[in-house]
Amino acid sequence: MAVEEPVKAVVELGSFSILNPKPPGGKVAVDGDFSYDSGNAATGAKLFKAKCASCHTIKEGGPNMQGPNLHGIMGQVAGKRPGQKYTKGMKTSGITWDNETMFNWLSNPKSVIKGTNMAFVGFKKPTDSADVIAFLNKNQ
Ligand code: HEC
Picture (cartoon, rainbow, N blue to C red):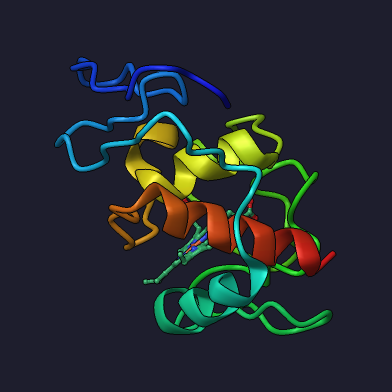
C-alpha cells in the first residue's frame, strides 16, 4: 500500500480497518510504506514459535491444542477445522482468511470476532503481523 502521508487517524471503537490500522486502544501506528503483503516468513516463523505455538500447531496433520491446527489456513473459511470447539462468533463469522482479514485478526482479534476466546491481545507492530502472515502463507 503506497500512501504519501503516515496514517495517523484516530478511529472509533469498532471501525478498525487497514486504511485506518489503529485498533481500539490505539496501539498500532503505521507509516505509509507498510504493506501486510510484504512480511518476512523467516521472522514470522520465530514469532509464531514465541507467540502462537503454545496454542497452535502448523504442521500438516498436527493436533488441535487450545486453538486449531493452522496448516493451510490461508484461503480457508474461518471456524471450520475438524474437532475444534469454536466460539459462536468464530463459527458464524463467514470470514475467509486472506492477508487483510488475517492482518486485522493478528493486530486485534477482538475487533474481528466479538467474544472470541483466543487469548492473544494482538501484535503492536504491524510488521510482526505481516511477518506471521508470510509464514502462514508458506505453510499451505
Ligand atoms: C492462548 C492461546 C492462543 C494463542 C497464544 C493464539 N491463539 Fe489463535 N486461536 C486460539 C483459539 C482458542 C482459537 C479459536 C477462537 C474462537 O473460537 O473464537 C484461535 C483461532 C485462531 C485462528 C482462526 C482459525 C480458524 O480455524 O479459522 C487463527 C488464524 C489463529 N488463531 C492464529 C493465531 C496466530 C497466528 C497466533 C500467534 C500470533 C495465535 N493464533 C495465538 C488460541 C490461541
